[in-house]
Image 1 (cartoon, rainbow, N blue to C red):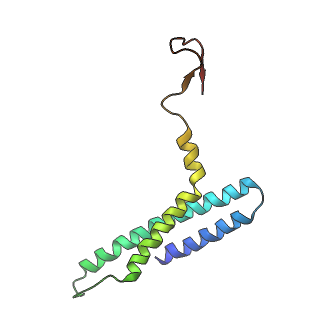
Image 2 (tube, rainbow, N blue to C red):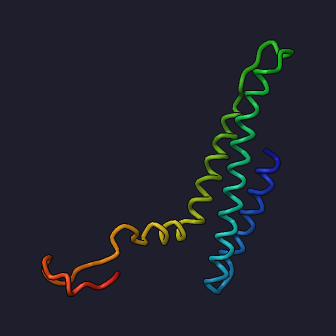
Image 3 (cartoon, one colour):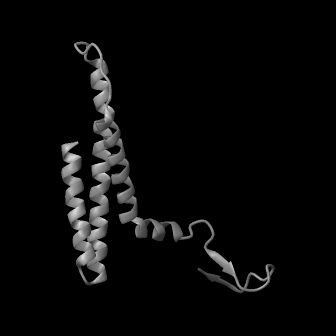
Length: 120
C-alpha cells in the first residue's frame, strides 16, 4: 500500500505538470505517463488488499479479527486509482475503439452497385 501511495503521488505530480505545460504533445505525454502509473498503483493496491485478508486468515495466532474503516478506504483508493488510469488514457482507448476492424468498406451508391466502393 505504501508503494501504491507513493506511485499515486508521483502520477498526480505528472498530471499536474501535464496540466500546466503548453504544447499539446507534451501534455498528452504527461497524461499517458500518469495514466500508466495510476494503473500500476491500482494494481498494486488491489493485490495488497487481496493478500492482507488471506494472510490474516492463514495466521493461526490471531484469535479474532475485524476489518476497520481503513480496509474500506483502501478499496476506495484502489478504485479511484483505476478510474484515474482510465481517464488519463481515455483518448488512446477511444482511438483504438474507433478503428473499424470488421467492416472496412462503405458503399456510396445503391446496395447492388459494388463497383463504386471506397475504403474508410
